[in-house]
Image (cartoon, rainbow, N blue to C red):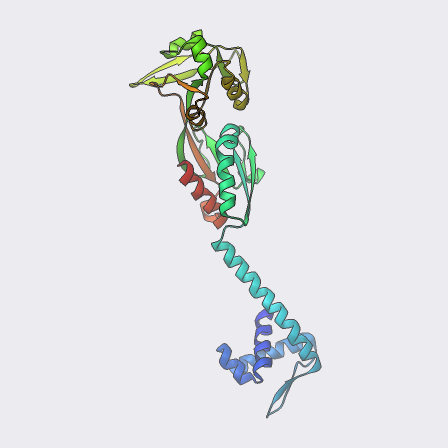
Length: 295
């Protein structure tokens, strides 16, 4: 017999004044009610209820035990309700890992809106361009850009991560607008990544099924695209960056799209979770919201 169940039966017997009444209320037999009470008494080594053929009453210890049992059972019921509510309402901490540029420019504003919608959720966001092991490092949600390798992760596709080339109106007025990708060779390009002779930087543009590849040249390279964006806004050259961020700068008139008749590079992007079967409501709600915003 479960002790919590026995406490519940004892409470009902104490409140209704007889085993028969408690049995009827709990849909048990009077004999089963008596067994639950006897089990508690045997465990405690004392009588809880004085029983006669005509009536029953709580002993002094029974009165105190009854009050304590009510608190214990109420707390257990509250714990069950909390657990069931958490199954329905997102709550708790979500540990998320995402690429640096997408995470800082696009995902962070989304997370602010998400947290406003779900006040019981906390998000721990780590930005890194390296591949992480979610099981070893404790991440519950990953966002990755690029082709996926075979893994046990459950992946949901998002919109491709598209790049476009932009420069400030001042730079274009000073240096002219490139008409083709080949024209970029005569321009100052703001290049993402640290220079490596073994892996030279290449920008690819396509139009009407034809792809053109150029090796950009420029005086500024950086491993953080925010630095390149600031340089582009200041008129120092042409940058290649995420379309969703640059479109806002274009709308404000701070930048102009370079080679608008060409499509810039695009890479697949996914949101991943370790195991679909273990996804709690907090994870499911976050994944669904990301897919709605970026899918």
